[in-house]
Length: 167
Image (cartoon, rainbow, N blue to C red):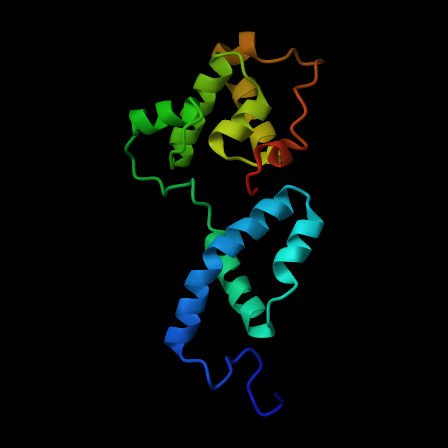
């Protein structure tokens, strides 16, 4: 190994071999993510225990690639009302930040709080809390559905664990 550049693939593996290995690693990467965010270290250990060094390195690349938020689209100036409604109802839909905010407004208007925001919009607990607080503070139309200033919002510190979603 001393004669190879750090991080270089073994000479016997072609780029095609590595690409094929990465494709095979996608379901494993999803499972690892699920168990990590579900606080199940024994399950993670079981999934990773038999992997070779090169498989672990390929898995890291796959995880980094998958980490890109799959539920967030770039802003394009167009509001997809159907996607907003689907997301507000808890159906999978990729949204722009503007559309996510509109869906959150609908969820809050229906009387739900940050836990429901996290679950329906695929948000971490911290992001759901921040969005909820921002909407409650900046839009008086939501005030009947938001807690009073002295009243704490519902706890979302473990929303990701309950929903099984990656943060």
